[in-house]
Every structure is written in structure tokens, then in C-alpha cells.
Amino acid sequence: MEDKKLIASKRDLEGSSNARRIRHEGKLPGVIYGDEKEPVSIVMNAHEFEQILHHHSSESVLINIELEGEGDMSVLVKEVQHHPVNSNLLHVDFLRVSANKPIQVDIPLELVGEAKGVKAGGILDQVIHEIGIECLPGDLVEAIEVDVSDLEIGGNLHAADLKLDSKLKLLVDGDAIVCSVAEPNVEEEADEDASDEPEVLTEKKEEA
Image 1 (cartoon, rainbow, N blue to C red):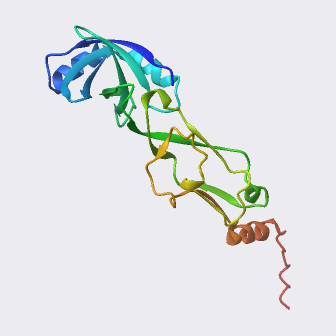
Image 2: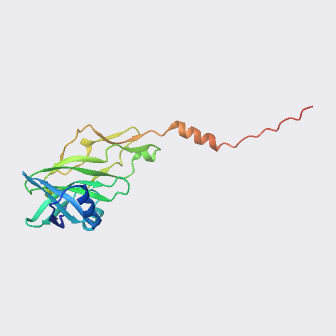
Image 3: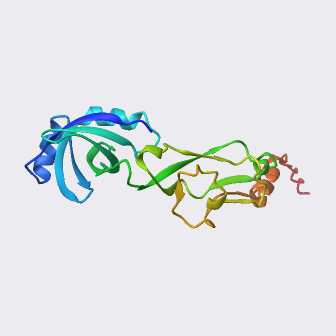
């Protein structure tokens, strides 16, 4: 995954009121931690960071930050806080990474293909949408494709069935179900069939 460049400066003032002022100015507060160093509070251009996220399907993105007074450093977007109502960016946590030290991250799973069971009338259910993996920063991928073409009705695809690159280490139980194809809902089909039948009206006999 290619690094993206972001320019940030250090932030001395803490507190919610200061964070609101920063966001009002079109900037985004954040923190850089990890690699056995003291956490550093930072501020960056909110629009520039939003554009980086906009071009990726996952928020787990490697970024090259040019930090005031410290130069360039590689970081992983670890957590992004959004406003619960309007989804605006509120705060972002970055993890320092080293090229030779493995990182642990959740990677989105993208289902591809049309399952045989779905063609036969079944219903595809994706149980897990992200999977935990460990890898070196340079081997990080944006998403993992999951081919469901051979999945029959009643079949399950497990985490151990994922075709991962040898550089990616799975961090979840291999028996965990990623997706499955369930049988069609018989009751719903029966209701639909019944609704298709024409309504039969009977004339009321005249009273003698």
C-alpha cells in the first residue's frame, strides 16, 4: 500500500473547547503514539486528511507525516472518530510504524462472484466484514477479496478458507464463518404465492 503525505504541526493546548476551535478553523486534532515514544498531540488540515480517506475503502491507511520539528515519519491510521449525527471528522489516532516491525490491523473483506447457492434461490449472508491480520507495513493491503462463486446453499466459507498472501498472518480463529448461503425463506415464498392468487368474490344470495 503506497504511503500518502500529510503535513502536521504540534499542538500544545488540550481540551474539548480547544478541539472545537481547531475544527472550526478547518483543521483536525489528532495524536501520534507508539514505537516506545511519548505521544504527540498534532493538528492537520481536515480536508486533506478527508481526501486521503475518501480514496480508500478502509480507514487503515499508511501515511507519511511531515511533523513540525521531527521531520518525516510513517504512521498507520489506527482510529478515526466521527460525529455521531453528521459523521464529520472529530479526531484521529496515528500509530508510529517501522518498516521491519509487524503491525496488526483489521482489513475489509470484499465478496466477489455470484454464489451457486444464490443462483439456486439461496440468500448470501456476510457474517464478518473485516478480518484481523498481522504483516509488515510494506505488505499491508487495502482489502481482501473473497470469491464466493462455489458456495452452495447451506455452505459456509471460513476464515481458514481465505486465500491470503503468505506475507499476511491471520489473527482470528480459522473456524470463524466469513459468509454463508441460507435456504430461501419458505414462509415468505408461500405468502407471495398466496398473494398472487386472484381474489374470488361470491354474490350474496337474495333473501326470499
